[in-house]
Image 1: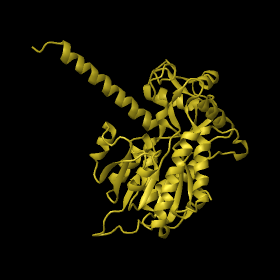
Image 2 (image 1 turned 180 degrees about the vertical axis):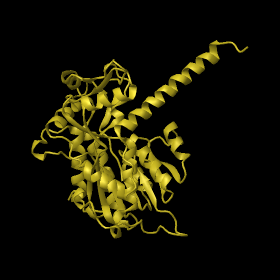
Image 3 (image 1 turned 180 degrees about the horizontal axis):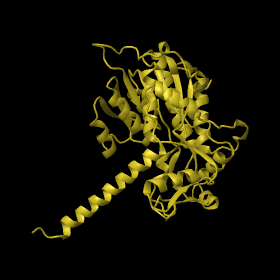
Image 4 (image 1 turned 90 degrees about the vertical axis):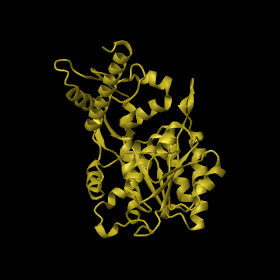
Length: 353
């Protein structure tokens, strides 16, 4: 059952994880793919909560990203790889909760693109098998799997992109392994961060806001950081979320509405911002699965209920990030970077008097 139907539960149905209290050790949460976008957001929010110990799992625990995570309070980085099942056994040992996150991205190949369904399925199988082993041991109490939002119109879902169906297949594997009662499925929509690219022709500029769907089609999106907020809330309130699934999003706008937001932020005066859709033929050639995804969004659409999500977010002290605030922060960071670059040039080439 989709959790959206249960919004409005009384406060008494909320709780904190078993074992949290004065003098009690903090529950340990293992986060897979900790240096990925989602993983990093989850680690940071769990760290800020102050009530968990976080075991950040990374293939390269001495990478720059992993070392940055290791500097956060209550975070311990350990080696683990979703394609090496034996590493998960030790990484999950003794944990209270697990955040599971898989990826279809294997590396770009001409004619195939970068997304490989079987690559993600292999990760999911290893992940769920390890979760099942540790659930039987008795220590593991809560497993969160990050999937992808189900369609607004299920009758128009086919054909769905491979990097969607891979996650939905992993959801089914969770169920057939009898793990529903200790599991929560969160299903994010497209990321705001997908607009933040350096690829020629798909860059946000003063006059262009790019996208992959038609300008008049509604497109649900979310900030990656919000995934971290929702995961923290789910782990803090297990009785509300165990055995449930929830589609999550932050905005529901057309391409034209997104461009209008950007124009307001940039204040370009008489110069208007245009929404530019990446031509579908080019998208299909470069990354076929993204082209398939764009067709799916236009036809079936993401099915998150923004109205109910905002009610639930308010109950859980989640601040949903708006696209406007995300764009303002991006613009501010870009301006700061430019100023920093100018200062650097001056220090190099302007003599000190």
